[in-house]
Image (cartoon, rainbow, N blue to C red; front, side, top):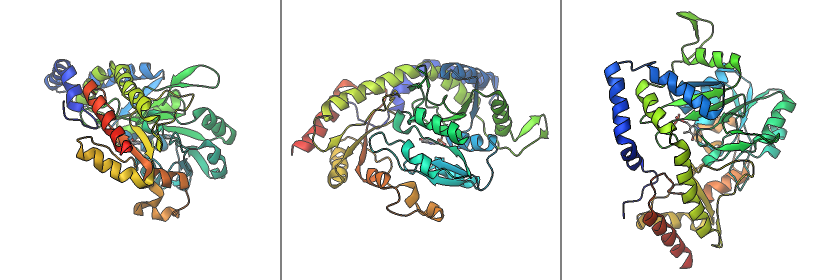
Length: 376
Ligand SMILES: *Cc1c(COP(=O)(O)O)cnc(C)c1O
């Protein structure tokens, strides 16, 4: 049996090796390393896949979030609502821009922001909500969009983990996660569902003015060559990454289906183990399993992880410490007990390997090894 890893980037590369090597060499020969033709083409192809009018590539997913907040003209002191159960980037850019992160606890089953708790957090200063579509399924966007409309708030989706997931809107039609709010942000970090071979990110919007603003902000705030109307940043996707991503985008749906079938096998096997909770689904969102995350008893989580490790099965804790308890964010004034669901999830979650190259024997081995732990 092949060694099991959390993500098998090498195995996936081997599948597309010839095509990818050729694309990289074409960029090398063109020497158009920045703003080469592949960047523009990738943006068009991804916009079309996402069903949005504008896709603007940038340097990484963290930049995408920052650029979104800059493009919307958020000002120091403005409040931005998001969750303490996410990757640090979400809250980091809010703080960097001197906006005020206002945290709201998550739903215990889906790990996503609890819309019922958003309304209580809205003040006169609230300008935006940043739902994070954690682990591969969208937050309750139908409720969030309604709240945003009611209070006149922007919605910036952190879609770094759910690219490709379909979402059913209350009107009945379906759209992609990341195409539902004012701006959607994503990351092409190598291990993400659509991963580059380096850093990359993108923003999505259907608003023409916002699209133009984002294009300007990513490029130093330039409007006309060497004319700057607002402060911007330098954040771009390089041509080699765009060329690789163009190839991988054609396979994104396949990748997501491969992840879903691993998740379905895990679900079926682990569903019946007392004390193990399989990931709950939001009925309106497809789940594309950026992570497959179980909840187990606090008392066994760490020994389970150690046992799996001893048996050659990597497992990860996403995330071990809630954002509001990180020393860097102590000045937000939150403390233990403020977000009990998040705090307890940090002690109960464990993510198992889920990727596009999982082989049948590996999957069977992970399942049987996992089950043995609970039969002891
Ligand atoms: C990966 C990730 C980001 C940041 O993306 P980078 O490309 O690493 O900057 C932001 N938010 C979430 C939820 C992520 O998983």
